Amino acid sequence: MTMARRCVRIVVGCLVAAFIAVLPVHARAPIAIQDRPLFEVVETLGTLRYVAANRSAVSASTALRTLEAMEVFVLRYEDPELVNLLERNTMTLSFDRMEAVAVAELCAVASGLDLITERQPPVDGNPGNLIATVVRAPVPDTDAGRERLLDWGLRWYRNLLENELSSARINADTEAKIRIDSALLDMARGNWSAAAGGFRWLADSNPSHPWVPEALLREAQCRLSAGEASDAAQRAARVMKLYRDDPVGAKAATVYARAALDQHRHELEAGRFIAASTLLDSLVIEIELFLPSFRDRAEYPEVLLLLGEAQRRRGKPDLVLDALARLESVADPILLPQQQWASTTFLRGCAGIMLGNLDRGRERLWQFLRIAPNDGRAGVAWLTIAQAELSIDPLEAMFAARKAAEKTAFLTAAERGQALTIEAKAALLLGDTQGAVERLERVIRDRGPRNVPDLAVEVGRAFMAHGSLERAKSIVLPLQDELGIHADHARVIILESEMRQGQPGAVVRLAPRFAARTTDSASQIEISTLVGDAYRALGMKSEAARAYDGRIR
Image 1: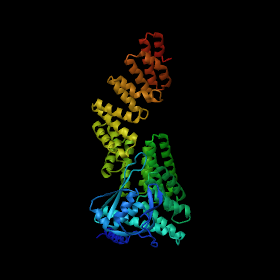
Image 2 (image 1 turned 60 degrees about the horizontal axis):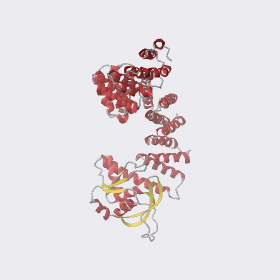
Image 3 (image 1 turned 30 degrees about the horizontal axis):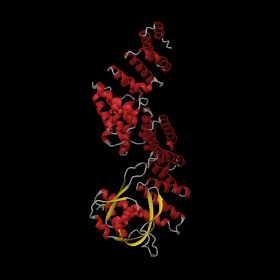
Image 4 (image 1 turned 45 degrees about the vertical axis):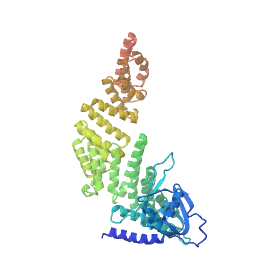
């Protein structure tokens, strides 16, 4: 029997014995309780309700049905026969404060069963129902069973810690230790907000405690795991600066970099491109400033890899390779842990393709996909391969673009659009014109022409080539008053479409406004020619001459 399995069996034995004795807390003198409700709500925090109880000879079934009647959850059973097991088991409930769902779980455990919960989707802005299902107990012979039994132990220990905190005899050092243990348990169970609050409590109430630096680091880690990337980045950056010469400082640098990269993705998704770019610039500056302090730390390779990822997103392949060179000066990449070796392969492949070394770059990215097919960066790897293959092998580019599109959860909206664009361009090169144009038009409609002006112009030209002049104008119309090369091309498409539809008057009307906004010299010449042709079609020869000469009024 392995040590892990032996530990699980010990936990099971201890838990069952404890649960049958049931829910130990501070006992109170018996009172006339039959006239009182079984559970009294003592506190409500969001969707959590904390209850008190003092009753003996209560069946587990009664306890669960009472909590359901209090609208704590909706009760269900994996098997109707489990109801009888709950009815047969009675217990004493005596505690001053316990979370209601935890009470239900322990009641099920005391009956030799288990209770699993799942929150349904929100309805009209309100939290969905919590579904509590009574199931058969997990067994320690499976990974899922061992995980669940460990969760039982953590819950039980946390209840003991909370009860200990309520003792009037507790001193400051003991309270600090208990709160640290409690926060670590919350962190182990994924209760990120509760864990972060516990670590913050230690830093605020006992700032001289030797564990404060670690607590501040753990708080930042919890914020990051909770999806609060901006807050996590700020907190981790402060820890990195405060403890740059301490092992915690290097650990904080990795948390800061990961949080900043997550925040960068959020900014891109929200369309805040300037903020996203500024964030990457700040990340690189901060990491480079503190990097020399971390050279002898175990986290140094990871910090360099995160720096390399930031440089990749900035479009700086030479600086990506610089970060990798610094890494190789202190460690042989082959001897790095699997995840870090995969990262070096990914970054080197991307940098190679960005620098035009297509063969070597593709080779590295194919290697990355073989060793880490489920990595979150797989979508970017496929997309980069597709970009490299487009001018070489359109069929291979289409395949890679479709593989990238399968990883939608790991791609930004812009990257998803790029995957569809490459697939469509590959289809064009392979002769599937209609299918390609339809794919590109879908991307433009979804993202808006202003967000993908190059695609809008490309599709507009394709529509013109096929005689779909109204569709050509429609797809680029939102760009008519914008500035830039793509907007210049869009104005040419609109004027040419109007001219080909026999509307010289419309061309003349639009010409002054379009000419004033157009800065691209080739587009200016095209507009002058189109306006001259329009005036000539209207019989206005002198105006046509001025337009051909570049003077448009």
